[in-house]
Amino acid sequence: MAQAKRDENRVTTLLGVSTIDGRTPTLIYANPYSNAILTDSNSYLTKIDEPDSSTTYIGNAAISSSTASGVWQIKKISVSGTVTTISWAGGTDAFSNIWDNRASLSYS
Image (cartoon, rainbow, N blue to C red; front, side, top):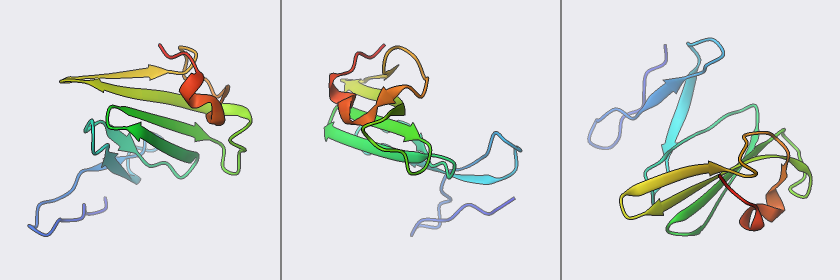
């Protein structure tokens, strides 16, 4: 197992493992506004849009996918006070949405 990196105070950072084999190290990131955990995956093209301090859109699609194609899995993270809500475009985690339309899609 890989060693987690340490920050300038020698505190270890968070490190996850892949669900594929339970051993491959995977970096873990947090949204600076909501503190929601975001993961980095090498198997998808990932786009993150933070149009304001309370909204984050995260889209995943096959590498080299067009943002105008209906092949995106889009999640919306909304923060209101101390409540963070995660919802999916079209109410599903299917890869069937257009990234360019993320702001006008319905989420549930």
